[in-house]
Image (tube, rainbow, N blue to C red; front, side, top):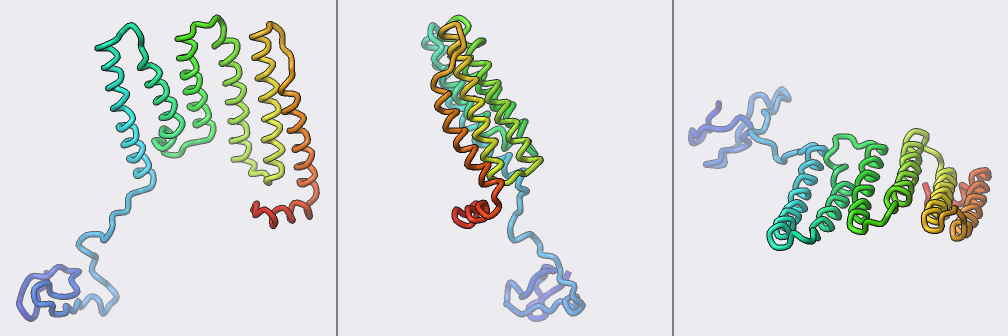
Length: 235
């Protein structure tokens, strides 16, 4: 511990001047390049993962409060109609898709897809629970959600591991759109009419095939790809 040479007040090791009389303080360690550490940091650096989790926690609390209030109001005043399930299920879907990834230390693509698919299935089941339509959930909604979730999970992991160029990525995206449209229409028409058939998805598939052919041309022609890179600032 050092003291001011002018007024004798006790000084902190990192002080550059006396806080009482403003007399400059000469630290003998400074001549050897050893500056004393500051008594406290000038700014608090919070790790990014901790900051993300704290933000997600605060958002979760804000979302939880109105849901609890709605549930209590529904249970106290009108138990015959559980309208609060719509509010709670919608909040749960939004929380699972947009908030829950921030609570994970290192979220993976397939983990996010699984959580999103499970939340969409749960949300869809709420509609089925209220409507009580025979077979609607098992034979229509659930297969479509599983197929689309698989396609999204595949492209996320494929892009993560192989890092394809953007024309190849676009080819894959439009191929999956075509597969999703065809499979969805087959499932829906089989549920409604009792037999699978295609109509609207054929138009979607024709558009996708035209775009796929275009991007195959771009992927195989490096000069065209480089021109598009410069023209549209792709890379």
